[in-house]
Image: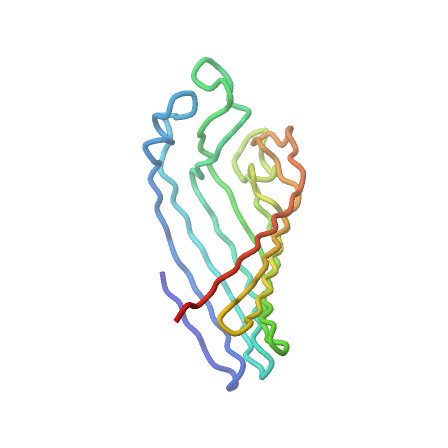
Length: 192
């Protein structure tokens, strides 16, 4: 990978990056009973990203646009059927593209630390055939995450909320899975 950043001002930086990647299927992807597919090929990808980051006095913010083009993307495909795949299994998508924009920011308000991000994706199957143009399985088009933390002397408390829009469980986009949210709570105490 190669990345370059340029400071436009003391509080504003622009960045750009390009990279390639390779991912071999895992042992489970290849051989796990009722899931593995010994015919899987390795993934290869080309990725680029452009970003703008600001660090004003109140905290920081960033906006990033990215695109990943992936050949032989390894996915779980619930539409696979047959004696080897009673519940679906690992499969390759010949060509796929994931485009997106992510916004992020953080600040401190009094004793509270706040941070969050939101992502909009276009995860698309670009293979020739009946699934061309479908959403990639198990990839939400919209996600958001918020963290809130506060310290009370040696005690710190925090919460995170993450939200995910609908997605599909299969390459055919026939089995729609609803959106969901997760909430996490945390506490820490510094004894010394």
